Structures are given as C-alpha cells and as structure tokens.
Image 1 (spheres, rainbow, N blue to C red):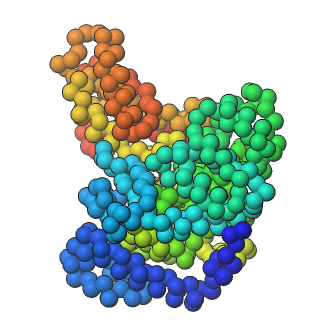
Image 2 (cartoon, protein in one colour; image 1 turned 180 degrees about the horizontal axis):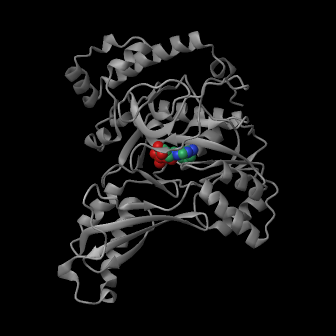
Image 3 (cartoon, rainbow, N blue to C red; image 1 turned 30 degrees about the vertical axis):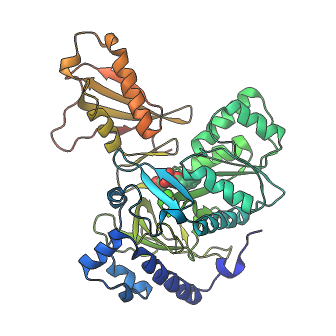
Length: 429
Ligand code: DLL
C-alpha cells in the first residue's frame, strides 16, 4: 500500500523546509543544462542566490517552446548513459518534445502514481485495465509502472479493439479502468450494444484531456464506476501530477514533488488562492530533466478550502489552456504543426481550416485545404493521391487520424486580421 501519511499530511512549516531543500538540489541539477546556465548568466543570478521559495521569483519562466531549442537531448542534466527511458509528446512545430528519465525518476514517478491509486482506494484486490497508448505517450507506461508498484493486477491493454477491451473487462473481472473520458463514453456505448455486463467495474480513472461534471455523471451512470479526474503532462513526468481524492472536489498535487504557482498568463503576475490562471510548476525531484518555473499552459486555481482527507491544497478542475494547443482524443495538437505539414506539401496551398467535432463521444478533426493553383485542373476527384499524401503526412507528425477535404483554390476564408483557422465545435462538454 502506498499511503505515505508523513508526507501526504505534512505540516506547512515542515513542507516548506523540504521544498526549499529540494529546490536547491534542483538548481544544482539545472546548472548542468546549457539552457539554464545561459539563463542564469543572462539574468545575473548566482545558483547560491536561490535558497528559499521567495527566491524562486528571481528566475524567469521556462516554456514549451524553449524545450524545442534543446531538441533532442539539450535539457538532460545527466549523461545519456544514465537515462533509462525516453517519452515524447507534441511540440509546437514538427519536432516532438523529448522527456528523459533516470532510474530514480522511474522510481519517483511510479511512486507518485502508486500513491494516487492508493488514495482512490485501489489495492492488490483490484484488477486494473489500462486502456491508453503504451508507446511514447506517458499515460500507458506511467500508469503501468505505478499500478504494478502498488501491487495491483495490471492489464496493459493499450488502445483500440473496443470489443476485445470489453470482453477482457468481463472475463477477467476487471474492477478499475483507465482511459480518456471520451474513450470511456465510447466504451460504455459499445458495451450496451454488445449487451455485456460490466458490473465488476467500480473505479474509472479518466484524464489526458479536459472533461466536465456532465461527462462524469454520464461515465458513472453508464459504466457503473466512481470516476476520478487525473491530470499530468509529459514534461512533469506524465500522469500522476494531480489527482482527485474520494471527495471529488479538486485535484491533489503532491507538494513534496511539485512546487506550484498560478500566474496571470498575460502579465506573468502571481495570483493567489481562489484566483484562476495558468499553472506554473517547478518539479522538485526530477533528475534527468529538471525544469524551473515551467509554464504548463493549463488554466486552474489553487483552492482555498482545506480537504477533509487531510492532504495539502488542491487544484481546481482544469478549464482550458492559455495557448492554442488542442487536445484531440488525448493527443496534444498545435495548429502550428498542421500548418508545418501542409506548407511542406507543394500540391496544396497555404489556405486551410481545421474543424474539431465530437462525434459519438470521440473527437474528430477535419482539415479543409485548398489545392494549389498549379495543381488544380478542374477536377478535385483527380487528386486522390494528393489527399492521401496529406492524410499520411498529418498522421506521421500528429500521430492522429484526420479527415482531409481538398477544396478548390480561392474558396476558403481569407483573414484580414489574425487568422482564425481552427474552429472547435465540441462545445463546453
Ligand atoms: O496527457 C499525461 C496524462 C496521461 C495525464 C494520462 C492523465 C492521464 P501530455 O500528453 O504531455 O501528458 O499532455 C498534457 O494534456 O498540459 C493538459 O492540457 C491536458 N490534460 C492532461 N490531463 C488533463 C485533465 C498527458 N485531467 C496536457 N484535465 C496537459 C484537463 C488535461 N486537461
């Protein structure tokens, strides 16, 4: 069992001492990274100037776009021989963001997930089906290692083949599942169609994309589970950063491992508890890829009320992003990546529109792109090869199936001001 009472209910004064000690260790690790050496030099900061939590404000933010500069291994604070795992996630252009883990990181990360799973009541009596991608995405292996560490019987089911997933839940008496909320709804519908009894289920963990209370109610009713919200991001290890406890009012973040700030995304000014803004995190135990004041782009707030469970301050449910990143079926997509792909294909022009819809509970992305004038000879039907090329190139970069419609030159909207090429029609849900 992974209920670490001493750490999970640590008193604020003791927590501060621990955080400051770990902050200083993090600074030492960051000084092995060229980006931070250069930042400290530019800002005139001496590593020994950062001793307390108040000193943190002296350090500028780190952004996802900074990580791009270091592609692939520029942000590693240890030699590659000490990196035992690499995951990647979408970056703001064609290149992914690379995240590395030492053995110690894998221990820390799986320990945090084991704590979360224990917090929501999973034990070695449970059978857990992990229905997210087991590859470069952090969600699959992250939960897998955490749940094994907590002694839970774990099925690394991965994604796809919904019929087989449902049969496994039924045949193996699965008690807990993990997937994106949209896949959870899809699964529920498929189970109803198959007339399969999933009454062994009691807990559902849903995350990797924003979801609402309405979706929670639907998931709970249709799957017969208690639904828990799980938040994370690859740069901060992956899933397991913040997690709901059985109170279901906000997400606990482990303050011994993550230093949390909320800022106004425009001015960068620090906001207090109860004020909604962008989450900025300084991970305190990351070894291979330490980060300082990392701007997550995710909008939330620190909640004012203490939680009856005794654990530290919570984050409110995430309500959106401060940038233009889209989350499609749990996969992060930046509109700039789409543009990058289209501009590299000479047969299509640089006018395009992106539509995001939710069809049968699943996110669907449709891209309309104009054929370039040189390639249009009166019949779109002749351009099937071009259409397939666009679909394939998008899939290679985004790792996502998309629908592509080629349209005649000059038919898509032109913008005078800032182009608004992305239309998200998924609504509040
Ligand atoms: O999505 C890690 C994860 C895996 C979390 C499985 C939970 C479950 P990334 O692919 O790097 O990592 O995407 C991180 O997804 O910055 C948010 O914008 C969004 N996101 C993740 N969880 C939630 C959530 C994983 N519970 C990005 N609510 C983040 C809202 C979420 N948005």
